[in-house]
Image 1 (cartoon, protein in one colour):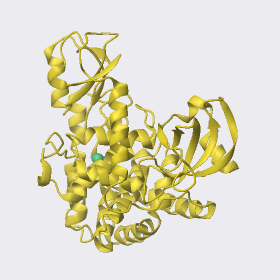
Image 2: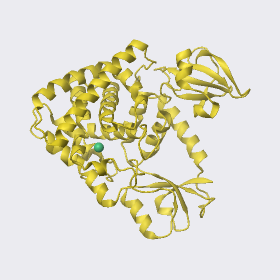
Image 3: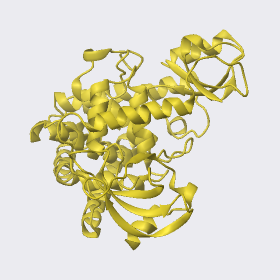
Image 4: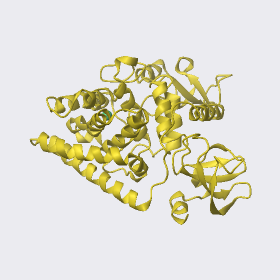
Length: 404
Ligand SMILES: [Fe+2]
């Protein structure tokens, strides 16, 4: 059985199944092993791990600790609560083909620009920052106007080109987040510039470390951490990178409990936009396919962020971020009390727990359905129990949506 326990309760003899940490740590540390000595516990604490999951079939138990399923149910209930409080979220709906095509063009253009800029920096070429500023400002403007569709392009990410796509992905997500928080256009624009440049310092990290598929040594991880300082150095003195953008670059790896880097800032010592950037950076990273981990479903990633927010992020901001995407993001497969499996087509801003769905499968009869729309806000007594992995039911989400 998988159970969740605080790090203080972890003892030699227990089998570590997963760690709850403010960033994805697989490249640094394997998280599936039997704990044998105190040195391993110390290393986990150093990495900022505050809670862990243990596998009681493979190691010692902690009686009374909640099971993974109990934790999951509690998280789901907390998310549904989040959905019904606060200001009105953004009204997301599946984009039409032409909107997707336009967003793709923006996305590709932005990725190319960022790639060019970053490659020039890596090769030590002189960067014409005035020209780059103009190009980035036009991109940021387009992102501001199209972030809803750009967020949906997140699923197009591939393992290659990760760094460039990540910059554009973070820019779209952060822009949507700013919009939900009703930032003015200028501030949103400055945050967008910071997002596009937030990892520019990675171009001074040796490529063999940056792209290493295996686990990183402590020294290699230190070299990666330096990308934040490198980034600040690169943009120092560039007139169009203002204080807001600089805060995004400087603070995107700080953690609310002080376990982040480079400065180990805590709470409100971290700028507000830096706290926002930290959340979005992790969300975009864990939903991407990488050499060392599979892409996590957006719904699953939001639950992880919520779980981690107890220590590592500003909890209130995580709640806002989740609301900026929807607790059941577009294209998420969900199961209903009636046994229907549906795919989220459109958010209901008044109640994120009751979106518009495309019903595609009947889990009770174990058979696919001729797809039809279900609007949980108006025409159904049914309700969502949680998100499900569509593969479990043989559902191809892309194909279902195309056929609908
Ligand atoms: Fe980074």
